[in-house]
Structures are given as structure tokens and as C-alpha cells.
Length: 283
Image 1: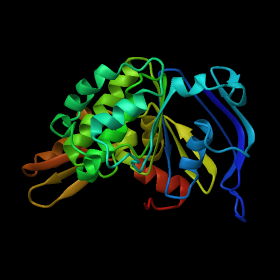
Image 2: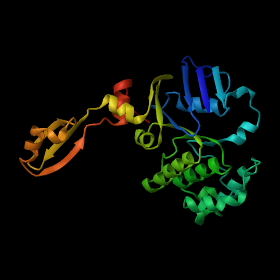
Image 3: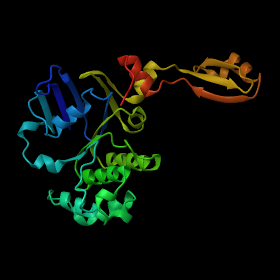
Image 4: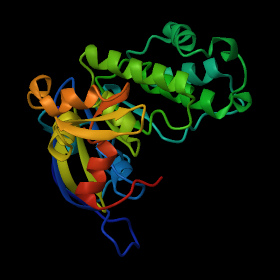
């Protein structure tokens, strides 16, 4: 669905290149994550893909067609969830959504009430957006991105600033969109969000892609195939997962006292990121 080849970009008056010849592909119906710290080039890449940045080098293809050859029909095909919501504050939530819906030929405005209900905004549907909390504005932003039923979705930090319950709802809806065949490109510095949602992820640092793979493959490669056992008496020991049930050292150890917990030593995605890039994730 999306193919990027040798993408390079430098902002005017900047002495530093933001993107250093990155290449990647995103398949139809895939959730693809760009992971990295602020300033890594995540949002810049997305802005090129939804055509608000030009002046880049390299090529971008959407459904096999160079993005420069797409006319306004491309805007019908995509939905964008910006990191920072930008609505008309004096208008109500519904007035905002009806206005944005009017930009799209295939958007059915009557469905907006269902989306307000789904994301717990129905009580505020006729209130001015200036009265909304930050989390409410973020959810309204999400509705705006999806209401015209686009084939490709770009989300920049889709759960940032949300409480756990609403973050879970957003993530679950993103997975539902995937099940409908949507192609979804997420940029985030949240490794937990990426691990839960993405089929594949790419680590980007200083405009360079340093690794691209499934989250599970990355965690398997850089973690330990072992478990750590902690007894209530404070004793701990690590054991290989290989034939663990026949490991007499493991069996003898758990007989020494009551087991407090057993957990695998699989690396987290954030630990993998640090190992590969040598950088901490900072917002």
C-alpha cells in the first residue's frame, strides 16, 4: 500500500538533515509503527506522506502510484490524527465534525452521533470545543480522522494525554480498523502502545532507520529465553526455558520454599530500542 524509497529531507535554514535516505514498505491492512524519541524524524515522514511537506528527495508510492501524481482524490483516501488537536473552539463538537465531514464526498454526517457515543463524547456533542478537556479534544481529533472511512490512516501519538480507559478504547478501535483492512501508520515514542498495536515496527533515530521487524522478533532476538523464579524467602534463580519441566535444578529450587512469582526474561520493546540505538526514549 505504501512504499518509501531513499527519503531525504532538510528543513529550510536548518544545518541538519532530518531524514537521511530512509526506505520502508507498509502492506495493505498492516499497522506499522515508527518508534523513536522526539526529533527523530517520525512526524516529518508522516507529513511527507500526507502531502503537507514537499521539497524532499526520494520517492513515495501509494498503491503503486507516485504520490506526486495523486490529485485531491488522495485526500479522500487518507485520514490524519495529528498529535496536537486543532479544532474551531467556538464551534460545538458536532459542528466541528460536520464541517470537516463536508470536505469529503463519501462522508456520511449522520454517523457522527454514533462516533460521539462510542468515544464517550455524546454528552458534550453540542458544547463548544473550548469547554472540552485535553483528553476530550484528543478523542474528538480521533473521530475527525476516521469519520470519512479512509483506507489509510496516519496517527501521531494517538494515545498521548489520554487516561488508561480512553487510551484502551482508542487502541481497541485502531485494531478494529485493521480488521476492516485499513492500512495504519503510527508514530509514537510509547513502546507499550507500539507493542500492543503494531504488526511491524521501525526504530528511527536522528533520521536513520536502525531496525525494522515485528515486535516479537525483536524481543526474542534481544531478550533471554529464560525464566526468573523468586521465592518468598527472597531467593531468586534463573533457568533456561529449554526443557524446563525436566530441569532438576529448577524443580529442586521451587521445592525450597513457596514461590512468590515466576516471570520470563523476554526483553521489553523499550529495552530492545536502547540496545539497538544506544539512546533512551525521551519525549
